[in-house]
Length: 306
Image 1 (cartoon, helix red, strand yellow):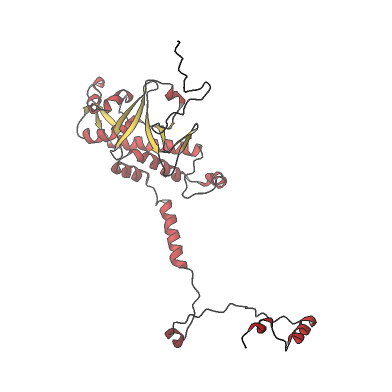
Image 2: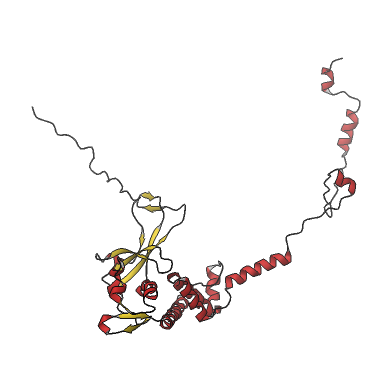
């Protein structure tokens, strides 16, 4: 007696079950970074507010990317034939490593010079040591060049930031980026970009770089440009003044007598040019029908109790 072979539950040609995507990430990143198998992800303090943030180190191209999360409620993704309920997206944006070093440089090197290797000896920061060749643009080099000991320089830092803002504003203008306040149509944006003054682009670029600066440094940078009052606040004040001047829409006021007030009677104003409908004159047939029906009894009268 031979033993029969057990049939497989999976039939030939049946597609494999879909993979689970709930724990996966959706990344918006350049293909060149994904081709690099040596990139690493580290956690550092954000230079502006100090909260933990994720950064990607591209060893091949010697670049640092900040991993930013764009998340909105009630959003999902369709991945193949499956649905990912958590609809966030991770974006890799390049960041200058000097922004990551500035808070530590200002805090520890304002009164003395510290070697760059000692400054970045903390866990996580030691990974970006090779991505920071020098700090000459924001600090003064002290001692032998090979030691790389730097002391923080406020004037150099502000000059460097000012140059970065101007460079970014130039790119924004070349890319035709909308920097005015409010939401307008794309057609109007293209036609109005020529009328945007340089201060608008500088203000917008300064706001973008301020996301990586502490409040004190951000305020110093804004004072350096001597910006005028924010256009958004101007528009808001204008709208507020218009409401105050015009006031709310006036309602129709009804004058009531004392008697009406006591009886809580509501009096509504008559509509202007109100038209009174006249009775339609009867035709000859209708007059004859009314004359014939006069004096006759209705059908219901025969069913009444006598």
